[in-house]
Amino acid sequence: MLRNVTLMKGCDGSVLIDTVNPSSPAEKDSPPNNPSLRGFEVIDNAKARLEAVCARKVSCADILAFAARDSVEITRGLGYEVPAGRKDGRVSLSSEALANLPPPTSNVNQLTQAFANKGLTQEEMVTLSGSHTIGRSHCASFSNRLYNFNSTTSQDPTLDPNYANQLKAACPQGSTNPNLVVPMDPPSPATSDVSYYRGVLSNRGLFTSDQTLLTNQQTLSQVIQNSQNLFGWHIKFSNAMVKMGKIGVLTGNNTGEIRVNCREINS
Image 1 (cartoon, rainbow, N blue to C red):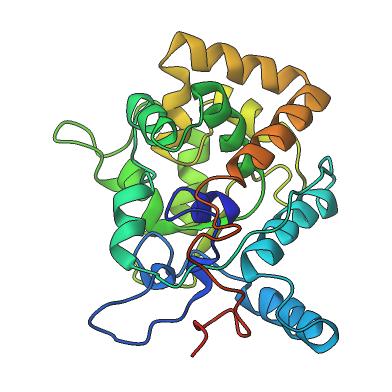
Image 2: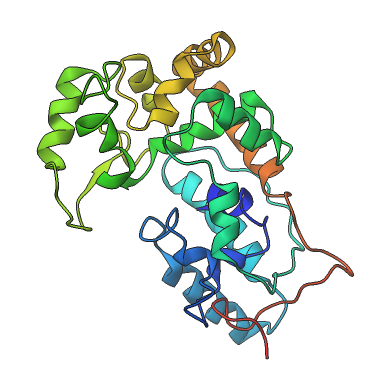
C-alpha cells in the first residue's frame, strides 16, 4: 500500500480518507486502487488504540508508514527505522491516483519517469518493484496479456506459455467476477524474497510492468543482481522504503493535521 500512497499525493495518509461526495471520489475509490487496496481496518484499529492512550499525537500517515515496515518484517523481510512526525493531509482526490500511479501496462521508460517525478532513481524503481513478491492481483490488471494483446496475437509472446495457461485457468476470458485473484509471485506469495526477480527472468512476471524490466540493459542487470543476492536486495529495499516514505510529507507548520479518524478529515 505504501508504494501506492507515495506515488500519489505523498505520505500524508490521504489514501485512507473515505469518499464523501460521489461526484468527487477519494483516492481509495480510484480505479487503480479499488478494489486492489485492502486492509484499511488494520489502520483503523491501530488508530483507535493510539487515540485511547495518547489522543491526537500519532498521525494516520505515520501509522501507515509503520504498518508498511511491519508488514515487511512479518513476511521475513528486513526491518528498518521509520522516521516519524508526519501530519495528515486534508485532501484526497481520485484524479491524483490516475495521474500519478503508473498502470500495470507501463513500459520501462514510463516507469522510470513516473518514479523520477517523485525523486526516485531507476534502480530504486527496480528495487521497489520487488514488492510484487507479496500479495495478489485481480485478473483485469493482466488479462490483456492473455486474450487481447495486440492486433496480431492474442497472447503476449514474452509470457511463459505454461504460466499463461495457469493464468487463463484462474482468469477465464470474459469473466467479470471481481473476486478472482492470483498471487503476484506464486512460488512464495507471503514471503519477502527474491523469487519475484527469478520469475521475471523466467518470463513469469505477472504484469507488463514486470516483464518490461528485461527490455533495458540497466534494469535487466539490476534484476539479475537482485535475483542472486537476497540480503543485498533487502538492504536496498529498506533504504528505498525510507526514502519513499519521505515523499510529500507534511511536517511542522505545513498545512495538515492529526486526524482523529483516519477515514475523515477533522471537523
